[in-house]
Amino acid sequence: MADVEQTEPNNKPRYRSPPYPSIGLAKAIERSKQLYGTAMHHPAGGSVLGEAWGYGAKSSGLWATAAALLQYGLATDEGSGASRKVILTDKALRIIRDADPDSEKRKAAIQSAATSPTVFAELIEKFGTSQNVSEVILKNYLILDRAESGKALFSDQAADDLISIFRQTIDYAGIKDSGTLPPDNEDKDADEEEDISEKTRSELSKIQDRSGTGNKTPPADTKGDIQMGERELTTGLLSKDAGFRLIVNGKIGAKEIDRLIAKLELDKEILAESDEDDRE
Image 1: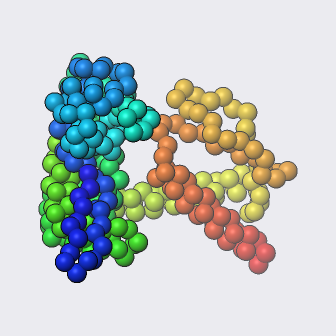
Image 2: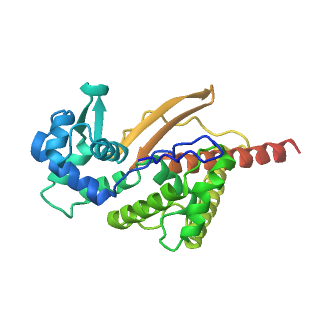
C-alpha cells in the first residue's frame, strides 16, 4: 500500500510513499483462505477476487489486498490491466491447508511470509524485531533517515500505518529478535572462531610433522567415499603437489561460507608464517 500526499497550497509536488502491505499477515492469510475457497489454486481475475473478498471488481481495496498478498509471497500475478490474475503460491497453500496447524513447515512458511515485504526485511535488518524499539526511532527512520541511503521517504501517515502493520505481523508470526545479534550470540560466534583458529593451528602442525617439512603437505585424497548425509561441493587440483575436495555435511548458507573463508584466510596466514620461518 502507498498513500498519496495532497498538493500543498504553495504547489509543492505531491509524492507517493513506497509500497507496503495494506493489511497485516493474519488478515492476508485469511484473505488467502477465502480466495482458495473460491478459486482453489487456479488463477483468479478481478471478478473472482471480488467474489472471494466482497469487493467490486474495480475497487481499490480489492487490488490493495491483492498487492498485500503479493508482498507477503502468498500470491503471484500474471497479465496486466483487465486481464491481470492472481494465483496462490505454495507458501500460501502450506499455511492454509496444512492439516497440522502447529507443524514446523507451516510455522516456517508463516515466518517467511512475515519477512517477505521489502520494507519489513529492511526494518528487521536495521532494528531487529524487538517490540522494545521505540516507535519514534522507527518513524524517524521511515520519514527522514532513509534518505541518507538514497531511499524514498514515507509520509507521516504511511509511516504510522506501516509500523502498526509491521508489529502486528511480527507478533503474529512469533518471530524473535533476529535482525541484530544480542551480545551473547556475538560472544558465542567469537568463541567459535577462536576454537576454529586453535583447531586449524593444531591440524596444520600435525600435517607438517607427518610430512617432515615446514612448508609442504601431501596431496589431498580426492577419492574417498562420501558418507551418508554428506555431499561433495567441488574438487580440483591446486598444484602438482596438492589437490582439494570440499565435502559438506548438513545445511550450508552464507554464514557457513563466511566461516569457511575466514578459516582459509587463517590457514593462509599460518602457512605464510611457516614459510617465513623456513627461510630464516
